Image (tube, rainbow, N blue to C red; front, top):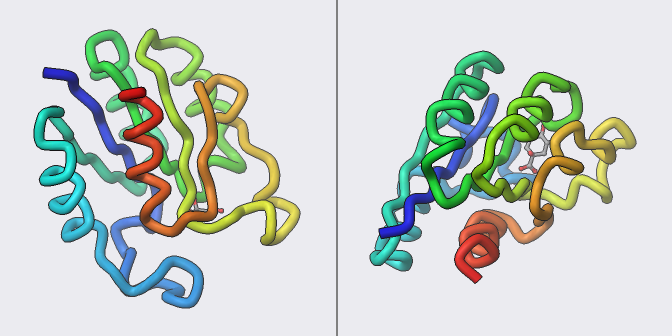
Length: 139
Ligand code: DQA
């Protein structure tokens, strides 16, 4: 069975509550249950942290064993050399995803420190960005 980690960074524990006009009104855990049903032949794991170090530790923990990581690093996308380096350090392919189309937003959201070490980037499809990320890993 293929193993895929869905990894969410800071403030994404507040999906369904935070800035609903940008991120929607659905909480992530109910969406993740839907993903597990949809990809029932895949071992899907979910982890969220608001801490940069905890996200890096998780990338290291699965990055030599899992078949893929779908990461939404939230604002760390635009600030974290360390998460970019963690992705470069592992073997597991990583897809960067964003709920919003970051390129339609403030200029500081246009740059990612992760993207160059990722297999690809998906943004702007709402929560469906995660499904598309998983499909890309399985394709
Ligand atoms: C986000 C976009 C980021 O710029 C922002 O800091 C987030 C969420 C997205 O999914 O659209 O927290 O990654």
